[in-house]
Length: 272
Ligand code: SAM
Image (cartoon, rainbow, N blue to C red; front, side, top):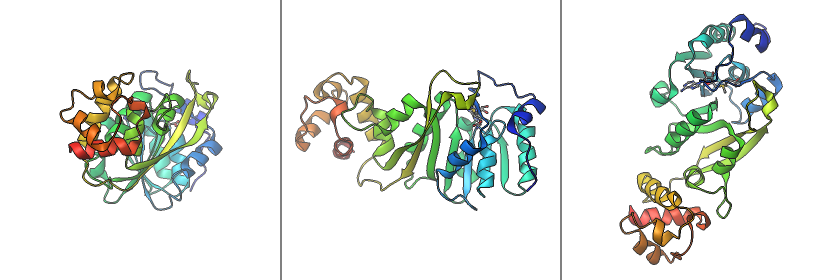
């Protein structure tokens, strides 16, 4: 492995001024990046999908950890800097230029892959919902390690009864474990975003029997679409849902945010 220039130098050399439109906020602190790359566990020889490598700070850390990285980056300006990394870590980095939302990721790997990404908020959330909604379970991915705005991270790991508990929490926890792995201060980024960030780590668990993911999605959409209303009102548009509440002994005057995840799963099972 050849020694690598500091990331700030890479940015200057390749003229990578941060693009607001692409949600670019770069991380330069290599110790912090090594700690992030350690969150998924031992990556030596393991396949990793990195989305949005940008100038390659996190990519370097993943490569140093021995990962076999496939990286999808939308900004063509970043590709030459990433190609330098590919040379420094021969055979460990495959680069794909494109929009991660439009690429069939499962076709890129033969074995389960860990996903690691520091992405703009809207892209990250869209991909997360996609990963969590997989019809195939266990899914193609073995873990998700994702940077979000701290407020979104808190919604992902929220427990019932808290103000942040909603659809994202149910989707993230009904057949996966989700934890807040690390808080990241806004000053760690260049340029610093307006809000704080946090990294969420998700691992797939057992698939509850007899539940169609699309039904769980429908029930949570209706229930949290009108989260201030009682379930007997918010679930009206879902045929059979009110009878199912009764059959399960769930109080129909409850609101969605007080229902346990198991109760959502039971509801979806009866309706599936
Ligand atoms: N990983 C780098 C780091 O931590 O310093 C860059 C992070 S920056 C917040 C997000 C990166 O995602 C940018 O490089 C941006 O170009 C890229 N990106 C944004 N939307 C994307 C998409 N739809 N598909 C692939 N990459 C995308």
